[in-house]
Image (cartoon, rainbow, N blue to C red):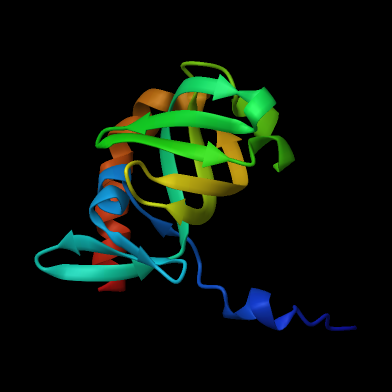
Length: 141
């Protein structure tokens, strides 16, 4: 069997960290990385994030979508370039997005790498999301 090597930049990229938009808004972005408060005085450095929220406004012509989680709104850019991303562009859908942080203030902006429609079981996903975020961040600190 042949082993394929990943490019160095892919091997060095940390996995996405589950965060809430409010955590990014309160963090400071430096050199493509944001340090978010993870509770109990702990912090976690993040550059690639996993977020979930409800679509408030889709602007396919501008390649963006505005989402809202329980802590506020955040913008996602590059949605037209993501496989399966266009199915997530309807107002009211509950979606997951993984992406790279572009800005934290005045509003978090993420450049999408992956998107998925979670609307089918939105009530369950929405209730569990904050717990998932807290659980992962506790493991990382």
